[in-house]
Image (cartoon, rainbow, N blue to C red; front, top):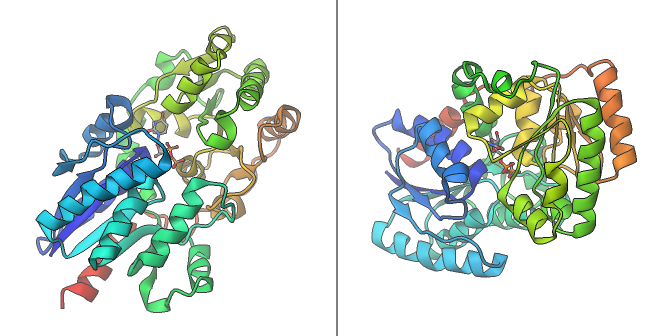
Length: 366
Ligand code: UDP
């Protein structure tokens, strides 16, 4: 059975690596990788192939930049050619980025069976580009693999039949389980002169937090305030960095005492940093899940999350948009207070990808 697996942006590489490993155990499957090019440089792409053991993709579409519409349309056109030359039996898309939507649309239009891994997540906030992508991909997919229980009822309430929905756990956690030992051998913390459990990691890249000058000024004020409490390690996303530079705010970060401003980190380095942190501050989707897995407190600068199990069961707390006073109140509470008792969401055990492969095998290879 020939499968095309699509990956476009940083979190996709982490998810696809887990799937790729699981399919490689079954000789009945031949998986070809398509990289759209959404993230394409060493720090946001190459390092993930190397560290996660992914081979070079079979197809590199080299499409990046441009508006959401232009990017989606260009990926669709390029992926249409790939489908025509490969005639695969199945297309798999993961997550919620534009690459996933674009390729899902082409597969659906061409009548190729479509699989969505990480289906059913809903933030309820359609101002997030990812939320629109999630809803549309799920409506087009024939098999929907769900990472947390609420995803099943979200999909049922959108009219998707129970036979197409499979609660299998979280492929992102598969990669984390696979890599954590290797990551724990690194000495990133020591190299930065930091003590374990005595620093804060920050990531921030959502348009709602880093696109306007006002929000970027609030972000700088927040970092200044947090650095008075603890050293902060901030591996900065390229979009956040270029916005700070374009708006003339970058230099303010460079002078903050206690701030370790780093380029985007490799996967192993990053999970080494987060697993040893006292607290993580983020607006990332994946980081909310990884901190829950590690039991490290996480504060998320968003009004809603499509990953509610990280709040209900895990270590995550939502604090809304960038409001420095409110955030500092909560950060002090987390640092000085009792750790809230947490547990791991069901099936976040490192075997989600194997379950996916077994289900596809049973349904499609009779
Ligand atoms: N990540 C990384 N290096 C970094 C920041 C994040 O390897 O400097 C990893 C992180 O461990 C997670 C993924 O990137 O696996 C999350 O990606 P991102 O936050 O860009 O996307 P989102 O999850 O918000 O869609």
